[in-house]
Amino acid sequence: MIQIVKGPIPIGLVRGNKRQLALLLAQYAAAKRDFKFTAAYKSVGVKTTLRADQHNKCCFSEAKFVGDDSDVEHYRPKGQVDEWPSGMSYKPGYYWLAYTWSNLFLCKTTINRSFKRNFFPLVDELQRNFSHLDTRIEVPLLIDPAVDDPRDHIKFVGDEPVGSTLQGKCTIQLLSLRSPEFEEARRSRLKILKLLKEFVEKALKDGYTENEPLVADAINELRAYVEPHSEFSSMAIDFLSGWPHL
Image 1 (spheres, rainbow, N blue to C red):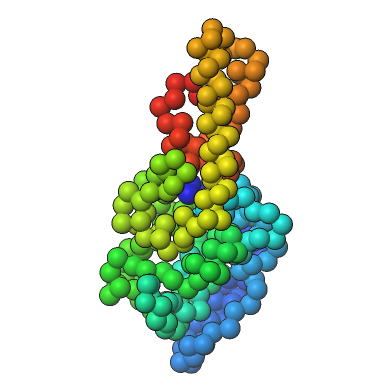
Image 2 (image 1 turned 90 degrees about the horizontal axis):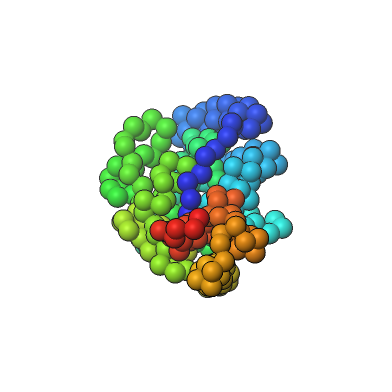
């Protein structure tokens, strides 16, 4: 995972948030708890902006999106919350954040529907907010990539993500970031990184310089792999950490 810097809120979401939030708060005041949500939070404008802000990568796995393999994910679930790992459910969820920009991300459909679902564990469940009237300070166990720097919580050993904090360990387990689907893709990328790195090191050992065109191209390719737009860039950063030729 990498930290995500979000751009301006899409205009359509600003309008939708104000209008829909008023309706949701009115429903809450009328003691309704089974809220209905419009598709305003997953409009084309929202998806397009999130895709650009996230470099066309899943906010959690860093895998690139292919085709329509993406869902707009609510960091705090909108309709209901499932306790983790028990799976017990209760309503309402964080209905008042359903159209809030800071609560929306784009993630792989597999992660959203099979793993993340409606889970949102806290360090202290007694501090959970159950309505827009609550003001308790929540400490999530799930990393928020727009607030937290995931690099403070998750590092890579080879192609395997390893949690260095409680939040990191929980995020890896909850989202199944070690699932075969992502492991295979990361392993393929790591193989390329190793080959390029070994090529550069052998060329330099044989007397070539970093200015040699083929060597320079390989180094530039490795530099690109650690940039935010690159798939699995956090893994590349850890693999090349301390390497003197970047």
